[in-house]
Image (spheres, rainbow, N blue to C red):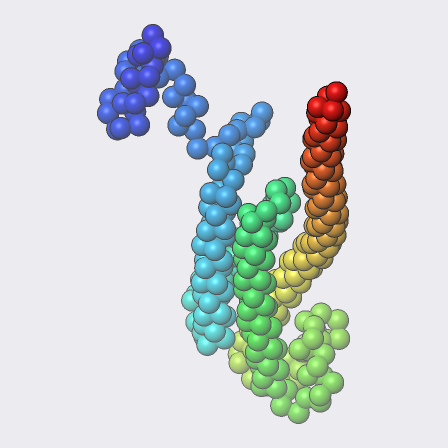
Length: 313
């Protein structure tokens, strides 16, 4: 039976057919040998057997998702631009729906990347060269994610400004002699004072059709601005989370460096003690040889004295 298992193992490693001696069509421990991951008690996939291989797989996955995130931000910028240049209601609604869907997808993707980076920071890392590699790679993907968030933030801030400028132009179409305060009230809010100012302008305007169209577009742009404000708030929270990770890692690094310094100090002290012990051992060995030679010398002298004494007799 043991010989059959050994033959099956060799055949499996060489790519040959497995011995049908086990119910699984292979050797009895095939299930353990072919597992890529270890599962925890809940059946969820845990850390791979090869820790660094699993780590590199996680880094590669995050990098792929960062590329998707950047691509989504570029598409969001394009959809914002189309929104500002589109005059057809049907196309405008279709574009708005596509933009909302893409923003939601990008939000979910950003949260996923953030969670993965947080998981990497929480993983226990054994000391040594692997710890330095993990630290550098994790810092790299975190900095890339922060750059992607900053790019997204700049895109949203840019189009928030352009949407507000569009609202201002539309309001001046309705009321060309609007004061700066009235313009600011309409641009900043479509409710309260801003809504009252626009309603008064609508009442005083003689061009009912263009005025209503301008008012409808202002409402739509205000809705776009609110969505952008929400996205900017979410991005700000992600920045805070990343800053917290950096602070935690700094504390960890300080603790590791302090521990490493202590270990280095203990090692140096141990080496010093070892050197002293070696010197003591050499000194003791040297003294033993001296004593041995003195003993031989004493024996020789005694022998000579005895020999001389016996010879005289």
